[in-house]
Length: 450
Ligand code: PFF
Ligand code: NA
Image (cartoon, rainbow, N blue to C red; front, side, top):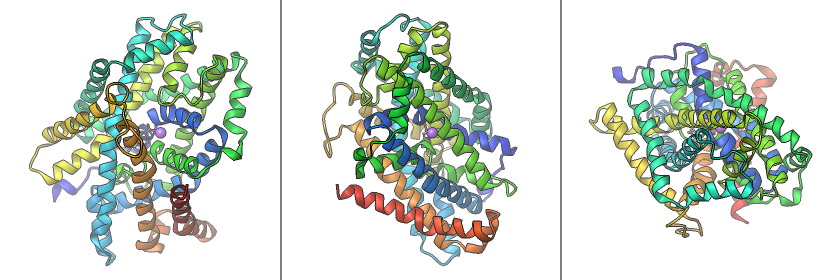
């Protein structure tokens, strides 16, 4: 039993930093920009912003609330809370699918974390200095075409993650969060890069690409991609925010905290877009470049601006830190799952879970070279892992969380826990009960129909 009584976050600030540490990562810079490019720009961006506000915020609050109430890992929290309300323990499935999602996501996330590590080294050696688009493209394809190099960097990244998580929540997680607070400096570096974008003469084009929508580009698939990105970037639908919520003191205001985390996360993503697309247009690159987009654009900026070497080094180092704090939060639920179901100690459970993730990551990294073949629905392993989790598992798990809070938990107690009264309570209730879940269902059905 004592295992289940959690220590609480030493302060509210630590909680916000940990939640932001999980949220802010490769999703904001790497994934956001390539999704925007792949999905036609502004229409995607605006739908994404709507998804963050209408679905992301309520689901984030719902996950924290479940975690704080349940005081357990997500699976036990859901099943016990459900049981108390006379509902089936099948709600635990929501937790299980979250752990599965975290496992699958970390496998390919670590591959990209490896790219970021490799680019940190490239910055140190001055590999980008004076390069043009072709030169930078050659550096990137050199990395992608080598399974050995990719494996080395993926292994290095995963080893760091395992090492940090093995140390346990208080030492590992909080400690990592504190020492990695500089990852917030990413925000400032993004501002510098946006400044560079303004000097390229193509900033207006980038602005229009990101914010002047061509609604004809809007398909069911684009909307689903935008919703998936909202879940991915906010670390939703994985039980992670639930697990964090279980460490959360009663005094922390959920809505206000959610707003802070969301503004930070969304702000960094939008700045990343404003930094990257001017470079795309100025160099005649393709916005729909895919997962390599930031790795063939940003080095051009760093290689051709004053002080670019040191800025590039700082950028890729901090991007790696931000990726690490997110990756730690992805491994955590997997480890807890193993720990509670086996007699393994934390360290062994961490190594076992981490190695399993690492092994799947090898299949993901081979998708860029020797195994670039469709294995299901015309997708290779990497794209399949990314698509299946972000467009399917995460939203579905999130749907479970919001429906649970809005329909299964007692409405009055939820209102008091969120400090809601009168009109705001009604607004919350309409959004959480109807708008968010129905909106998500419509998005699913719409994309299935084509
Ligand atoms: N939200 C992180 C990012 O934007 O990079 C990625 C992530 C972390 C996704 C944790 C999911 C998660 F549970
Ligand atoms: Na994010």
